[in-house]
Structures are given as C-alpha cells and as structure tokens.
Image (cartoon, rainbow, N blue to C red; front, side, top):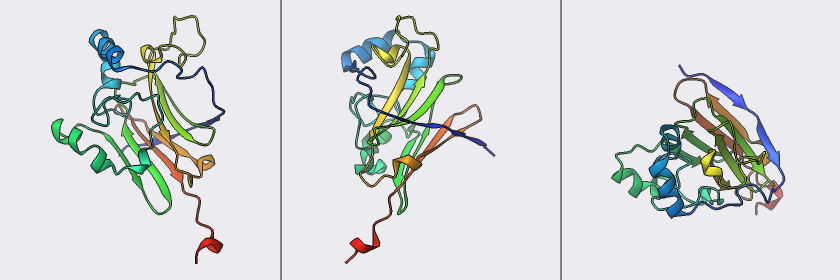
Length: 190
C-alpha cells in the first residue's frame, strides 16, 4: 500500500520575474537533445510537465484552462499514439476539482504546489538544486534548465484557499491535488 504525505500549498501574489522567459518549441527541442536523464524523465511526453502533454507544443509556464476539458478527450490522440504511457488525469466531481499525476524523474527534487493570486494552480519541481545563473530564484530566466512547471487556470468557483496536495512516499512519485468547489448559494437556485 502506498503512503502519502501532505504537501504545504503556498499562496502567492503574482511575481513578474517568475516564469518570465517563455519556453519556445525550438528551444525545447534543442534542450531535450542535450538534456540529461533526469530532465528527459521529468519533461518526457506524458508527464504533467511536458510541453507536449496535450498532443501539440504548449509552454507549461503559460496557464492552461485544464478543467474546461475532459482528460479522455484532450489526451485521446496523444494516448493512442503513445501506448497509454500518460500518467496524468483530472476530474471534476460535484464537490471538487482533482488533478492526479505521476511525477517522473523528480527523485530528490523539490516539489512545490502553489496558488497564485487565487487564479492559477502551479505545480513545479526544482531538479537542479544548485542554480549557477547568479539569480536566487531558479524560476526566473531559463527555468527549464533547473526544473519544470505546469500552470493551470482555476475555475471561478474553485475554493482555492482550501487546496490540498498529497505526494506518495514510494519510489514512484504520485501527486494528487484537490481543490474544493464553492457550493452554490441556495438563494441563487430558482
């Protein structure tokens, strides 16, 4: 049986220096061609952090409206062409938004789950603990050289202050993030 530990969810104000350098497709291809094993695992197709998660290139530092799409539909072409190696899923229940993902290649890397300005869920992993760029924050500049990220727009009815995140303790890292929905106001119902 896999055990899980609670991750602290950070609540942040927008930071214009964070994720300010977009990851372009040609830069990603060059980077992956010279990247190391850990980088390849963390950013591989099928990973939550992969720019190719949705079947075509999409910068994971740009917020994506994930819950507007059904995972089976959005990932259907990619799953069928890659023998179902995708380890990402998201669902919407009557009470919650739930994101589940295997986090490959992280190992001893630092996983961070945060909500920015109540509007964007951010899952990031710092893979290289020593940043040599002279900056104190690895998320500024060429962030993909030091870690990875997936930014997801939160729906308007997300009760983001109650976001919970769990990470498995085993060799295979699994992340589960749950964001409760704000219950509809009974007075609003006709």
